[in-house]
Image 1 (cartoon, rainbow, N blue to C red):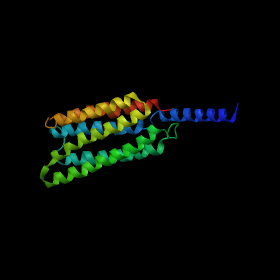
Image 2 (image 1 turned 60 degrees about the vertical axis):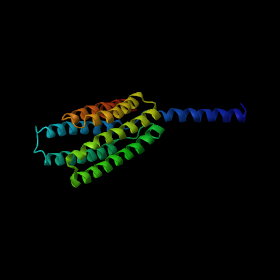
Image 3 (image 1 turned 180 degrees about the vertical axis):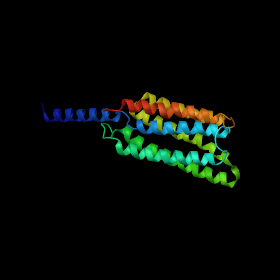
Image 4 (image 1 turned 90 degrees about the vertical axis):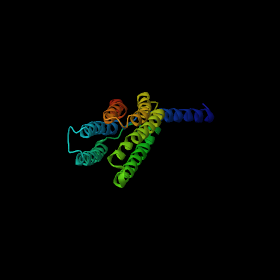
Length: 203
């Protein structure tokens, strides 16, 4: 074998490694499942609070969403600390996943601050309803991008579903059952895909 042949074989081997790494399994399933579970529960409780089945119609919402935020962050930190090193963590899909979900969280947090300001300026509690379609929009972007990079069809399909939820929730924004629809949407586009990704993670 000549030096040129050896170099060609080496390059082909490196290319094969790069291609296999690019489509490694996504490793964020436990985080998606955690937030999906919490958010499904929070939207369901929010629905019952809106209908007067639980709470006082005012402070219940603050208790619900502050509790959601605290539980979510604590759970995120615990999961991050307990997650072992896994093969494929450096793949394009997993590197993009970490960045795009951080950007998604920042966008949602910015929307929460804006809605809180609007609510305090006279828009009232209904201003917070607009967080939901924004959240589904960023879920859709994150899931479609990471699903495409990792060639993961369930993740990509979840992104399409989240995108559809943007329009569906907006169309139902005056419906008394809108948060039940949101809860079902999160269960199908965040919780379920998260469980699927978790099951597919390398051991």
